[in-house]
Length: 370
Image (cartoon, rainbow, N blue to C red; front, side, top):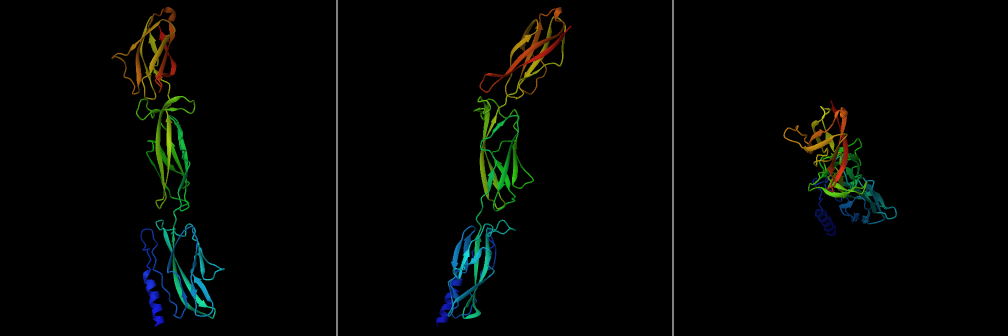
């Protein structure tokens, strides 16, 4: 009667355990572990049918093996490399799975891997195997963090120049990637490019001279680190997202400071002006190449005679698409001694971000008098 009760108790224990890993949701599908196939008669190991462990951890499992006579002799079949018998404690296994032991290299969605071990129990009184028992070890993968370096937290970027960031991505789970990079709120025109190295990427941004617009609600006033002057700027906070094949995510944020770079106004005049003494009349246009403000004409100085500057009338030539000032020049009061080439100097400026005149330049306009 005792023998029957022991057998029923063992079967009840086996029925209580079922593998939760069914081949879905990142689990590696395998058959459930087989149970004790040994002969009755006191050859037993008080061990669980399954054990859950995590990568990067270690533990010892005492099998609790007993034999009716002599000393238990325990041997193993199909031991994985991370499971070793404890030489100082017979019948004890040291289990220490390493990073990667819980993964399937052919399927990155697998996050739990099963290893089946067979425990063979004999006695020092007899070399005949009296008990075999299976142990299933489920190793759970611990996601290694994706790391991202190379993105400056607050770079200084100037209109008309190209900013480049060299990004390095690494992951212990996927040393060679592939990695997927994307930007959230990244400035328009900025690009992310891959390289021949799967861990290296390049972010490039080349803001045009019209990126920072004076007077726009998005424009701030910043101290230019090159000269400590306050200039117009745009501050953009955006986030770089990097994912690995399993969906592991790393994020890093940056504040891009884009500074306004003022260009000198451009005086557009006829390629050549010819006039008959004592007077010359023509149009001159002054443009802002940044396309932001209307340039101001601050001085018109002739070599001789007098100059009268008025606003352009309806007969003026069609202006450019840039902000401009069109002027009608009436240069008079010259005598015969002014015959030949004379120079008219036009000084023009643009309004700086602080409301004052800046970028003032003087441009000569040559007129040939006959």
